[in-house]
Image (cartoon, rainbow, N blue to C red; front, top):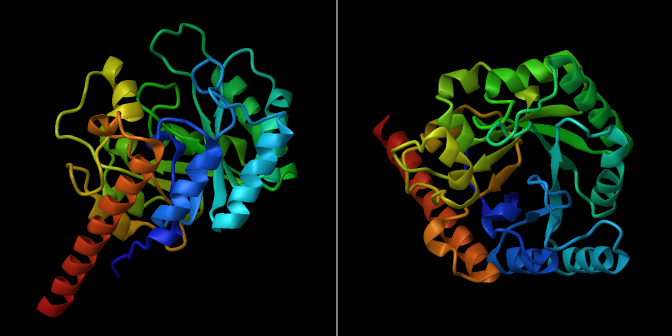
Length: 290
């Protein structure tokens, strides 16, 4: 059966708007019809956040008030980087803040290999990830591992291996379809992946030519396409995914870089609706042809 996409069931990723005021993101998500939003509590790029939330009770109160007023829940918070020099205890303030905001999921990623020469050993990565999962469990949070070709958890197989080695019940893979596509992933691979191993799904589209390795981060952070405007086999991927997964729209589009936060969210919503309508029409045509 073809999975239908209902905007109210989807979350809008913080990356879609490139950061900004978390309250404004929640309000824009509500105006555009999204049911949830993702927030950034920790930087993935070794630099301070433009909008700090941790340790700022007035900001936390404002986010909670916006969520209550709009009905837009906080789905996930990010990003927890598994890199040398990090102690699991340093994750706790972000985990506790995420739980206070009502989040249910967090994202964990590896160390970027471009520009770095120090990495965790396999045993160290497993240990740090296990401890992150344990701390997250105390806060009622599920941990998603996101693989990227340009980080030291580079593909689906590596992410699954980490999950298997850690053996934590509150952990799964984040399926970002861009990274899955750029690592040569196929719908058949997903069909063979245990349903319980997928934490949630991030949706976007991509151009036909893969950038070189050193340009992949720029594509991921600002060069994606709206759903249905590229070459990723979105229909096939969606058709093999298990029911009940949270879907996240993550579409930072280069041509929209100058738009306001609200305009970016509205554009993501409109393009997602169009994709959902085309998908539903294709499904109807298939049923009629049978």
